[in-house]
Image: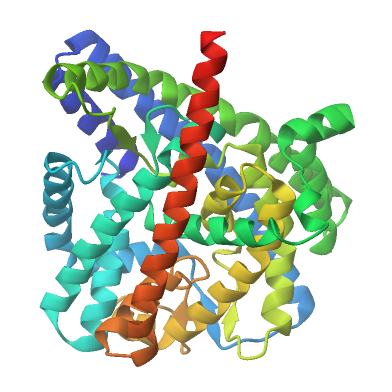
Length: 444
């Protein structure tokens, strides 16, 4: 039935169980559903506007690469049609409930649609190893890791994206949070670069009307239109459409948050009564609610032409970036968050991450093509398929290589765990300092 139908049903059921009352539960559920309809409509405008422009930019370069970027949507269909999918949904819900009970997570993941991310990594491991058990195990492990990462970045999401009580357990984005933190930490130690800062508020103060999100969308849209070699009508049309996205998307997110407020209050009240020593739970939503932040869209729009350039110049890249080039904002959203809205830093960090995605997507293409053929999915091409966003997700390919027994992948396990623990300690200290300062200001 899709997220815009299922999400209101889930929200209504949860609200009734928490004794919010019939009228408030119904109004809250429907408002959330309408908010997501609005978000997806504006998101559709973004993709429909940027997709053709991105393809025209690729065509203008004259590149002809063997692996076709189908975009994330066919991969989602492949994941839902895979053999592991029917087991992943109840297993993921069970894992979430168990982790909540044991206080291993604060996220109540109601974004059931995006469970396909766990199905996809499970299906890839199953296809690579031939072991159905391995596929289910890694799907479950991935769901648990995603919840932990969502908890980790939730305080910053609520502070910098203004999404109170929300976490974003979407695998295609959340695994880029520690990578963004690591990149930000490196830039802190580079003279000159560590002084550069440009967040939406500073841009607005410095450039006046031309620094407003709407105008930034218009300017970047016109620039992309020129790079795509559009005529005047095409350039102006793209500029207006992207300006509209920058203006309307935050308002749709506010509508969604308005609907979530009664449920959030009910969850807090429930927890205070039954778990007085426990912090509030987070409601896990789709990463789409983060696209409304001006820093996310601005950074993604700046990186689109860079993605085309990298596809042309990187030796060994096989992916022709078409279907997912307009969706760069998904992984970049967590990089922007790690940089606290600093567009310049997020843009710099985004360049090597884009290169990594291209190489990973190229390497994953044979496996994804084999998976698609195993379920008789119509791929409509004689060559190999992949996607910049989810085919290029480094976590999935790493998991596949681990279960294949790749020595390098196995050696990376302790390295990644240690780095993530160090980054987690760093952010925890920063969060504690920030909270103490806020409490001191409130006291004054």
